[in-house]
Length: 193
Image (tube, rainbow, N blue to C red; front, side, top):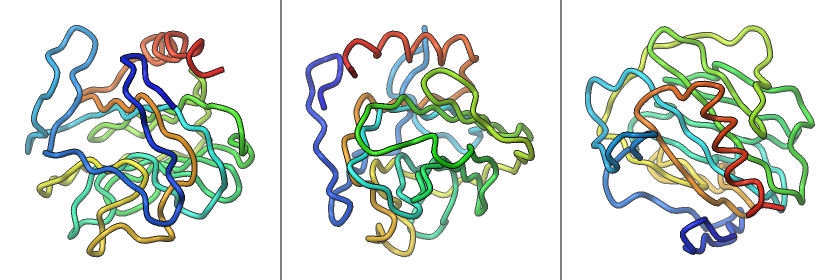
């Protein structure tokens, strides 16, 4: 797909494709400067992107912030059942209902989480988090941002790679409000029809 600045994102084949940010950086939020470093005192974050799945596989990582030594610092994943799961620290902390994601169309995905705040998963601007989401502490371990895979153990596992298009990836060092998530969804809707 193409993002709003004309940059092309590749089709992730689900076998060998992924992208790692060149350094540990966070995207600035609305009214904030870009390229803020990931800091040791990171206490909240929002990750968002547009996806167009070409297939569904267990634990397909969309965006992950972690390192080779820590499995689940912060990530959002897609499952074979078409559900989304959010991981904070080493365990799943929130999920959507099965079947919310299907092969073919574009979807806007966003996930917010904070230290002591249960994660929220958004699909096309709407909160789709099932009851029972749990908060977890935010560890920090020389983390990097990976798109389409995870960097854990000691590199991206072929069972955790995404198959399809990923576009307009953004990571913020704060929790976006529901209105901000909806605004980002509406801003990208025309480009993802």
